[in-house]
Length: 125
Length: 221
Ligand SMILES: Nc1nc2c(ncn2[C@@H]2O[C@H](COP(=O)(O)OP(=O)(O)OP(=O)(O)O)[C@@H](O)[C@H]2O)c(=O)[nH]1
Ligand SMILES: [Mg+2]
Ligand SMILES: [Zn+2]
Image (cartoon, rainbow over all chains, first blue to last red; front, side):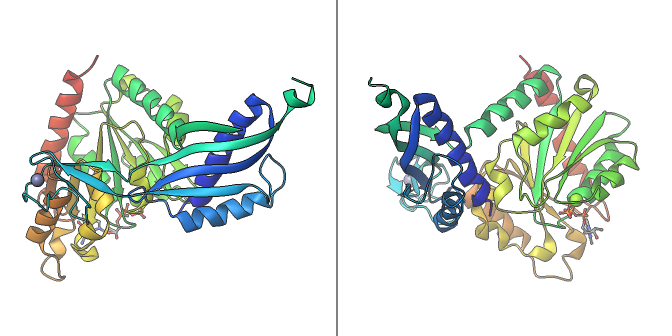
């Protein structure tokens, strides 16, 4: 849907941090994309390729994108058991009660990035 | 060198949403974010709601559309202060777009602010705008299977409104199944069925709004 603007936001946040730390290159970006986040990994990769070709930033064709998929998991608040939710997110498959919480799968996060070629390094620090 | 971030990609949206929320609370403005597929009847319901409540409440509207001022003009025709946001291709409203419009309102005078989101059952539910409640409209001709097909939208909203119930005799739509499906996805959500055209069921929606307004007014500070 809007993976183009989401990828732009990822790069903006990474570059802001990288500039602050004095990096001149970003070699790798790792992001976490939950199964319940409505974000499509393939579309993100496509958007990333587009930005790689812009060559006006710390990101280049050599920068790698790692997408870590986070599985959808829910837990029943009645019997405390965990389960893999289908569309009936609130329905516990163990005790059939309707009282559950999503415990993973909703994330859309920048986990980490790798920066190199610090300004400081060049000045012999 | 590896730098650990663990940052939410939408963190700036969440900051803007909290900014909006603070302003809404300070001004005791009840804010409802209304979402649906294109054409489910968001603007029509708002027109009917304004007519029903104009004497009791001061209402304002933010209209989200890809293009045109058409929906905003429909509400302006009723004397409602309305700001149109055109996203020019964007598939949802975000909290920053809302924040930018707020200086144009006199929030301290507004009791209820409705935000009509972009017609889309996928993206809008992922963006907190700072609202008190999120409502989703599903219209009868779309079919009740849209609830299980778009579970995240229905999971993330406080109220599901089935609209165009005047069409129930003509199209396949199982109201009971819709309610049952909703419970397995979001048992805490309120469920209303109405027709904006015939006004059948409108009083349930009006009562829900009045209750929400009272609740918002008492939960200040
Ligand atoms: N039969 C019937 N038609 C309705 C009802 N409510 C709305 N409509 C019609 O549905 C069509 C779309 O209504 P809108 O209110 O413009 O829908 P919307 O959700 O605001 O549409 P977008 O903003 O374009 O996404 C119009 O032709 C309305 O007259 C209803 O309760 N019954
Ligand atoms: Mg509309
Ligand atoms: Zn259980």
